[in-house]
Length: 202
Length: 202
Image (tube, rainbow over all chains, first blue to last red):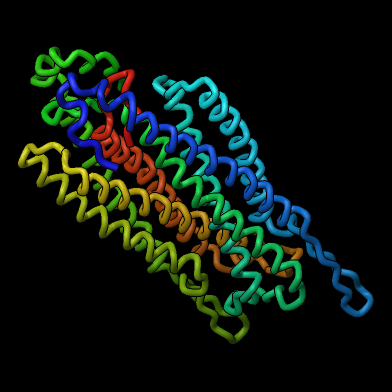
């Protein structure tokens, strides 16, 4: 993880550059690609699980149908997952293109765009999962102080599937957190200079 | 924001170092200090507003008391705000110390610790605010599909104060997002070398 001394003396840079670092860089980019593919898949899974979940219950002669649009937080979760899936797909294409071309990210505006996008998606998915989880807890346990009944004893299958969708969403947001750290690294290393006495630049 | 060319030729580094960059570095550290103080204050305000909020309502002869512990999400918000206030206070002391000493952050383990702490706090406060906001929306508008009644028509004063607490919490989490970007910059610039052809190091 640490290449502290490398680059302090400009003379030794080309020695390291040709061998080890290219391999490490390729591995980081491969990890990024895999992570983005996983996020795309899990986000679609989460949106699908939540979005297609319905259960019909007959109480006496009245039919009641539970669906995800009954809770605004679940609608928000489906939208957030859709957005992050589309975003990840676009990023996967970019990653594949840059791997085919063998280019390394030196373009600051592009690095800023990727960093910002990843940050927004990480915070968005986390907020969506937190809100959905809060709703799910209320649905599961109710809130007796406010006379809000638990509803999962009535709609057991519906609640389980929502739970699976929220779990996938949680994995998406945790992966986005890791990815946003990787893109922060890719951006801000462009501002470093490894000169111990002069790194006060922004 | 951009010092693209600086440091590419090692010969010119000392020229920039003595004047401009020290000033910029001091400004960044001052901004960090101010932001941490603001976060500490707002987090205490938010925890205080939510934590001390109660309202007693008499319905016929029965007295009902609304308090923040009726909703788990509000308890989570108070705890998260308490944590972030304590964390920010510790960081403010560190910032002041490093400003008095005039030292610049070159210690990688410390930079990693600050980066990780800021990331955790940013995601924690955002999740807490999202969950609390979701509960607040339910309390304000109810959820007729689930027979969850709105309660803010009964406890108007209570709900308003909770709303103010959540707004402060939102400002805290947005400031933490900015701060975590600053600490990512402070950490990852230590890994850069500004050599266009050899920045594949991790």
